[in-house]
Figure 1: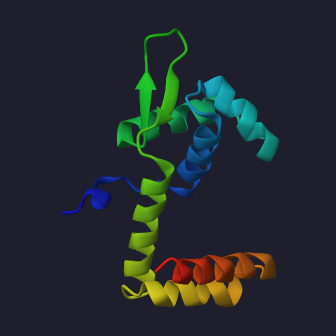
Figure 2: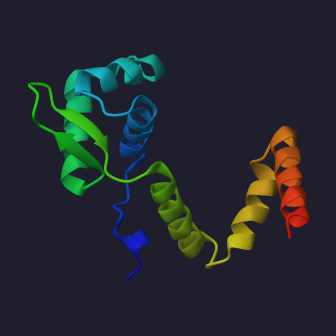
Length: 129
């Protein structure tokens, strides 16, 4: 099996917490909670701690237990996890076609500004050949 398939798949809640940890860097549960309540004020410390513990068990986070408050950090780089999730999506939803994924994204999920940035990137890529 490829290296990509060894990365665990986060749930939607885990993905939200992972986004926070990527943004913050290595963090305690309290630090993650402080960020989480900015987006979801009803979030509790117990919920964040439990999710962090589950993510550690699944291999999504690593935990430094050398301090009184454990510090959690991503076990995988953001780009590696995103690439793995996109590959999985392409296989499951778009029958293995990256083109079909890109075409759907361009049709319905890309702003005019993003489209212009993509076109500029593609045009610049062509110039470097």
